[in-house]
Length: 132
Image (cartoon, rainbow, N blue to C red; front, side, top):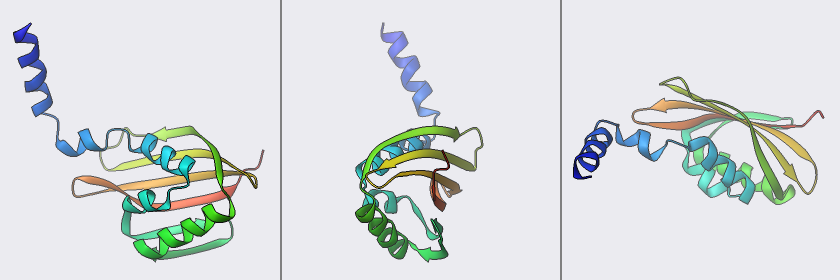
C-alpha cells in the first residue's frame, strides 16, 4: 500500500505544475461561458486578444476584451454550453469549440489558446451565430 502511494507521488512530481492546474482548461472555459462569467474568462486572456463577436472584430487588451464579452453576456444570457470539439494534443496550442445556447439564440464559440511561458492563454475568441 505504502509503495503504491510513494509511486504515485513520484509520478506526480514529474508532471509540470502548469499541466496540473490547466489540465482541463477547455472544460473550465465551458463552465465560465455557461455562467456568463466574463471576469473568469478574462483571467485566461493573453495581454492582447483577437476578439470576433458576430460582426465586430479587432485586437483588444485584456480589460477591453473582458468588457466586450461582458456586454455580449448581458445581451445574450447563457442557458447551456456543449463542448463540440477540442484539440489538446499540442504542447503549445489548445483549441475548444462550444455550442452556446442563450436566451436570444445559439452561437458557435471558438477559443484558441497559445502557450505563454507555463500557461495557456486565450489569443483568439470568436463568437458566431450558429448556422443550424
